[in-house]
Each structure stands twice: as structure tokens, then as C-alpha cells.
Length: 537
Image (tube, rainbow, N blue to C red; front, side, top):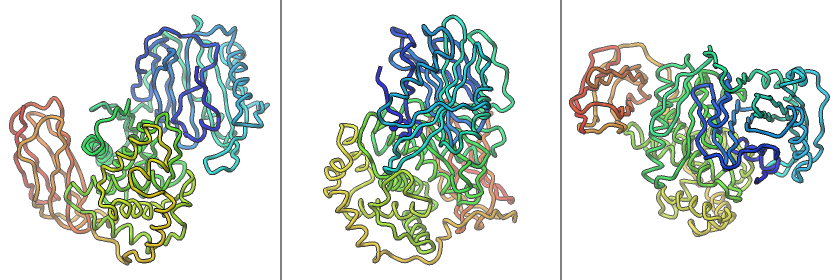
């Protein structure tokens, strides 16, 4: 069985497979996908179940080639991994001791040490459940030492089935997370799982599974849903149709532990959106959709770099995601690349960035203030070389083939990364200075005043499972409600006009929609306007 080092595990921040204890057996079991429904997981091969509470979200659910069932969860500041199977272990403590021994011998870490912590031990019962905590040191992606806290917990579920949980966070946070990690509910095979009071509303569309916090607003819900759909269409249209695996999207009505500035995070094939953030609530509607396309492009990046040893600088990873996000949302028709460019230039006018591009390399080398800069770097890279956004796909294909970052960059863009960074940094003083935020990107302050609405763009002939764009004009920042009527079914889509008075609605026609006439109607507190369209077979 292939073993990943602790250092690799920490660098990937959850986009990893568990190192299952060598005593686990499962050879010859057919590989299948795990069963996740909302905040519940059922092992597909062994029948045990795990349930959790929001804001935990799924980052991995699969079965490995040896038949071990794997589940990964995250909540931004910590990661937990469950692995289950039949063992030859006499008891749960032996499972932990064997696994800890493997980790202690990991050559990429040091200082692996058992912690004598009463709060940690309280999670066990001395017979069918055992718990032990540890700490260790490793090296971060920036080359600096990092210390982590670890909890291992094992359950004897009967019939030779053991379940192991391993949970990680930075060492100073460990005491505050012990009680949190002990709140997962585990059920032996055949035991009924009770309904959760904190379950989420589940929807699966086009290979993407959504888990929405029941308290999330309709507008938040549909911005997430349709933004993800737009992102997926862009991947297919510009970068082929790669196998992205099982994609999980969790829409939360809470704020990230990292604060108001973190709108969403992507790990492996999973996106968590923190719609409770003040920034999310106040940003222009088009920026919400751009955020979702940006995050979905990270899923594409993760899929294309599975198994790659290339170290991609953060400036390139985030700059590429921003470029794809802005390109995709410009297609909707309420703003264009010029406004996006001016918006980023304005951000750099308000908060200048003096850091050189090459310094934005490590995972913690960038904050929100640097995103406008790396977007401009990517636009400069593509624009000065007359290349389209699809060339980013060529770059990731090179990584998929095994190329290093430097080699892939030079192959596709015809220049070394260091030379490009120097070229871009030399150009930056000549960048256009923008002192006012474009009205298309004004922060949202919804107006309750009734406003007239005109529809300027609407489809006429569509097919099931197609994403539609409806575009209109009204009073700046007006709140407008739309309804799509298909047969006996109606679908509501609220939105807010931007600072120029342009407004849009995205709507994905359900796959089961019947062929025939349909209607789009919208109003901004005044006289409704309607446009017909036809759904073909």
C-alpha cells in the first residue's frame, strides 16, 4: 500500500488519501463510490455510518483500490479522515498504536510525541472506543517549520470491522478542537441513523452534489448553484471534458473561522461557500458568480495535478482561477472585461501591492489584496502573447504528463517563470491607474423603491439541462424577483441590479422539463414583464 508522508499530507491540506493501518484487510473488494447524503455517510462495503453537523463539509468520499472505505471532512481550520474495514486487531487501542507507530517513523516529520491529555482520553470508553493525541513537526510549503496536533480515535464496530479517525490542526488549536472532534456520531452496521436537526438540503445535478444549509437564503442558494453550473460549462467548453470525479458543494449560512474575508474554499473536489460573510452579502451579484467559477476552476486544477509532483506558485494558481472567473462572467452580458480590469486596477490604487510576483509563491504568501495583482499578471501573460484562456488548459495538460512547473510554463508560454516575473514587475509602474470603482462592481445596497424593468436579452429556443441567461435594465441596485414557468412548475430567482442598472438571472432548465412553451417573468416592485421561450425535445 502506498504511504504518503505527513509533510505531503499537510501541504495538500486535505486533498489526500488516508494512510490506512497495515493491519486493515479488504483486498479483492470491488471499488465503488461512497454514499454521502447531506451530513450522513454510509460505508458502501461495511455498512457503518458517520454523521456530522454543519459547518463540516465533505472533501473526500471514496473507496481505495484495496477496498478501504474513506471519508474526509474539513471545517477550514482542521481536517478529519475516517477509514474503515476489517482488521486482525484485538482492540481499538491496538489500531491506534499500530497507526501511530507508522506515523512516528515518517521521515518527513520529527518530534512525533504522544500527549497525556485527559480531555482527549475522555472521548474513549476503555473497551469499544479508544482515543489518543499526539503532536509533530514538519516543513510547510514555504520551507518554514510547522507544528501540528493530531487526534487518533478508533471504534470496534463488531464483526471484525474497525473504524479509524485521524484529525489534524495546528498545534496551538489542538485543545480547542478536541471536544469538536469528539462530536461525530458513528453507527455500527445495521443501526438506524436518526434524523439530524442540522442536516442540509441535498440536490445532485450533472455529477455535482449540493448540500445547502437550511437557513441559507434563496438568492444565496441560486448564486451558488448557477455559478457552479457556469463554471462546469466553462471547463467543458475551453478545457475539454476531464473527469473531475465526485464534486461536493456545501453552501453555508455561516462565516468562516478565518473571518469575513474568506468567501469560499476549495479542497480536492469540494467547495464550501460561507454565505454568511458580510463581504459575500455586499458584493456585486456578478462577483458572487465569478467567485463560484473561480472555485470550480480550482477543482479542475486539482483534478489535472493529481499525482503530479510539480509545485505551482500561488500567483499562477489564483491568477488563472481569477482570469477564468472573469472571462466566464463577462459572457453573461451585464459587464465586460474592461470593467473587471478597471476594478482590479482600482483595488491596487486603493491598496498598492509592492511585493514582486515571484515572491507570491507559497500557500500563505497572498492575502485578498494580492488577488487583483495576480489577475493582472495572468491577463498580461495571455494578452502580450496573443493567447486565449484555453492555453491554461495546455499548461495543465503538461503538468498532467509529468512536467515540472518551470518546464510546463516555458513549453506553453515561451518564457521561463523567472523571466516573466521580471518582465511583469518591470511593466507594473506603467499600469493604467484607476481612481474610481466601476459602477458595474459597486457594493450592493438594495433599493426598495419600485422600478420599471425592461428585458434586453432572453433565449428563444432551449433544451433541457441548458443554462439560460436573462438580462435586463432597471434602476441601479433595484431588487427584482423573477419566475420561470415550465408547465405546472415554477422556479423563483431573486437578484439585484448593479450600479449601472443592469441585471441578470441565470437559470438551468431541469433535465426532466417537458418540451413546449415556457415563460420568464420578472418585476422590480412594479409592473411585471414577461418573455416566452420554447423548450425543445
